[in-house]
Length: 113
Length: 114
Image (cartoon, rainbow over all chains, first blue to last red):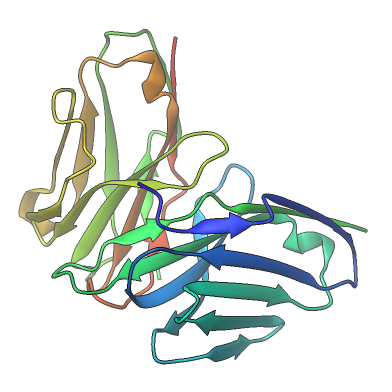
């Protein structure tokens, strides 16, 4: 079953604008990760935020985590056409012995030049 | 550093036929994962290996799917017999450990069952 639910399902913006994607999950987690998938390719890891962290930055990416609301957001600033891809959140579940990583349904981001 | 290698890249078969996918993870990565990604959906974990032992296969349709990881390195995923609903991209990923590490994905095998 899918743990994470991304919102919106699709997002279309102009180059230079910011893009915000949200992820909600159901059970306690050890960490939450965001991945990007270009069409016809495998997933690429973007950023990992641990359950005891609230915000993390990496280049033009900013991730927040609110464990009380079981939600996370990914902000891409000053977007580029090359950012066009599907974005997935994935949660590493807490309390298990093997840390299964479960993906959401994804947000399709289109950045128009 | 070499990435996760998968083959074949594409496969087209008739329903009820058999098919096998191969994966070579990044050297030194103890954990190997097979995910199934149906068009328009997120990846779904089929099986997770820690070295050559299975730690999660709860979502693997065991009546038709099987997987092995010999010597804790390469892995093969087999479907026998295939159904139409098995059409998907099969992604292999690996990670150094299993608790908090990020996953490295291969490019996947796109399977079409006709």
